Image 1 (cartoon, rainbow, N blue to C red):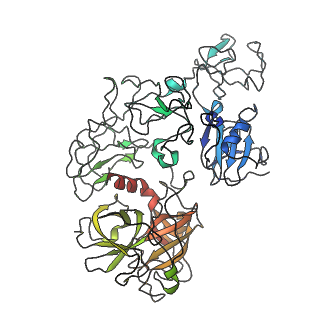
Image 2 (cartoon, rainbow, N blue to C red):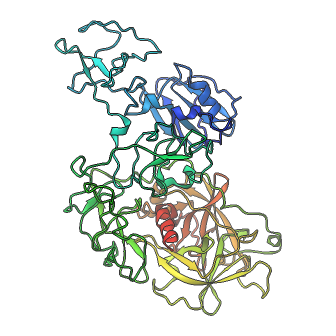
Image 3 (cartoon, rainbow, N blue to C red):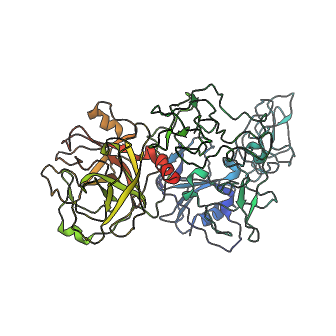
Length: 633
């Protein structure tokens, strides 16, 4: 059977409360499949009679020649694999439908206990000597015979005699019979800074020795920390983490009588492991959590507010709160000194600060990434994401009696599209409802980021540009606050005076995962009450369908001017697209059974120009910024 691109989603497992899950022996890579470059045909048939991923783990676990498995939630299919990502001639491939579960013993780079179960691929000793194949008796003769059970394959480091020093091997040097491989224990492989909120190690035991419960399971202990809802906490498998800011990393246990315990992890000493960037650097690595330079202006040139000040912007990042208090030798967690750019919340855009501009709560700093640590290309989409309470709509009854706007559009239903109204009550721009009290729109809709907002409103729940007084479902909510987006984003978030009421006429649209790229060919919709150029009724909402194209294809027409933070839809023979009055409205794409806000309508050179791709602001580049603004309020 050929390789199938498959969806992954871990279903909630069944079983008696407190029963240890066989999934505890596996690490999961979501939205991933494992390919073998020398096997055109799959390793084995799909077993379609499994109830969930846990049952599949139960089948793979006891088999010595099963090292991983694919799971398909839609068909409840299970495919057992004899390889892992570290096996020869294998590669990982992103998949919209496939989850890959691999046995920890084969993929962990650290060991538990003395490493008897270690099945990794290290084959070099602490002295730098290559290991001798276990099937060879030269240059060093020995008594061991490789089998599937003892795992003595090739020349990999192993511990067949339970040596307290961990995995070892015979060497290829006749003068050195055997030597330790120096593989660290999982406890020692990653130490804890401060309260360990950024701990990402592989310890899965508490300080009392109890095994941790998987974060993606709800038994034996029900809990709120579902991995899909706390993406920035890296709640992987059943590893110790600190998602709630406790004193140190912890986990729920598999003991029904003990809900949660702390994990016994070593603290990082100031001399044990250098952590922070040199203060002279004007660049940052990773997310910039370790940046300790003295940059103190945003990318727009606005000076930063001091971290120990609460004016002009109140905030929760008090320096004394984000400093280590546990040991004298612990390094500062965020080092929030003076008004220097920092990243205390691990924002994916890098270091930022609160600004001295009352109209701009925070912005990112004018720092570049270090040359050896470039961000992932935006052309690489992320793992599968599941949407729950957004992007749903129902057919509107009043849709049948209306004719709509947008050039080339048709009457449609877009319950997250809002109308922005000026002081005279006139429609001037569109927007998208992304939270009950927040609307995302375009910077071009406002003359500046400091426009007095008295009299400005958002209208929701109507298909008509000028609804009749008392129209059922119409909600008119004043705008209370405006937050302009980072430099180059062309985005504005509007905070409403009060939350709106969600119903069949008013719904939230989902936000995409950070840096998500809509696949070319995806069907999307634009919606708005803007200019129709004679193609429709100017008094009602228009919805038009457009297909996404890649930035590369788009740049053929636009001569390389389309940036990564923009996206395009194909140009059609007939004029279809956005125009004046539509700006700020959504480009909504149907993704994973929900409507997702992938683009924001921004001005193009010509409204709905035939054969020319339309350009939109790509929302996914700024998803983290949007969430942060709404979180900070």
